[in-house]
Amino acid sequence: MMWFIAWLTLWTVVSLPATFDAADNPADDPAPDSGGWTLYAAPAFGAAVIADIAADAPVTVNGRADVGYWLDVSAGGRDGWAYLNDLPAPDAFALDALPVTGQQITMLDTAAFPLDDADDDLLAALDELARTPVLHNFDSPRLAQIIAEGDERGNRRGLFIKIGDSNSTTGDYLRPMGMRHGGCQYGAFDYLRETVAYFSAESPYPEFRNSFDSTNITAQNGLNTFGLFDPFWADSEACRGGESPLECEYRLLQPSVAVTMIGLMDLEQIPVETYRRNLDRAVAWLVDHGVIPVLMTFPVLPDYPEAGARSLWPKSIMLNAAIIDIAEDHQVPLINLWAAFQPLPDYGIGPDRTHIRHQVGAFCDFTGAEARVGGTLRNLLILQGLDRLRVDWLAIP
Image (cartoon, rainbow, N blue to C red; front, side, top):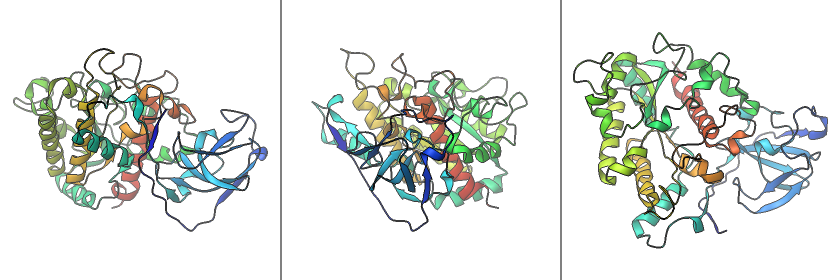
């Protein structure tokens, strides 16, 4: 297996480290592997292993990576990185209080990719995907301008909508966090409950409690980027004549955020440049109406749609690079799911080889399931992104 380290940026933040002794913590919350845990040289699975650390060894937590589930630690006289939920007591400290001391990196198993006929454009797009942070542009000054425009229009800061195709309509996608008895296990991410509460205070429609459990006209099975502005896809009962799904949903809800993951249908139907124009148009429209688009890249199996057929994976790389470019052009937030999903089994994709994998009982289990289930990791990353928007922008008068 050939791993490629795409990018690593580390910086120092002066702070007091948090220290805990695993032996002093309750035994009813054991580590996933009671035999110990692994100290890595960088915040990524696939990074060089520094040492295997005993489960009862004292650990000093110096900080965390930008996405939160990799910790900068000292143990056994050595410094390195540990995966949060591999530690014996991952909730023994306040995760949100830890300084950010590094950035998660993306490591690619390039031997698995169909690169024999790759041209320079594809290789450049792949490099861009690998280098772009998992959570990107959440500190963009452009957000203040978008929120100000939204306030003038009467947008509701506590509402978000979902935009997407069949990957955005499944029951595991965000809905469990908004249910009264969603059964979420937050672990060290307990601080995210405040963000769930913030976006649960308003009901978008009478039949739904909040933005998490609501359906949206802008998220439908089979929807592509053309459909966002096509009245054919609008709800005939809720929408006015000639309204597109995007126009209708905005008029009905006036949200502040649009969590956007769309491209699966475009992959099979639409040229890359057409996709780029369509998505750029949608993002520009949202920004003009004071709505913050949170764009997401998406994973595709290297041999999709099936073994022996012409792979659509190279085209998916170009679509994802277009998503990143549009986020940069408009300076709006991006969640690089493609990069975050690289270490997951089957790149986070389920047995149907198309949709993001989910596991019943683990939809919002952030105590370890996020390391193996794509849908769980997606929910966690979206919550982390929404949390940054709430803390740094939306909750500020």
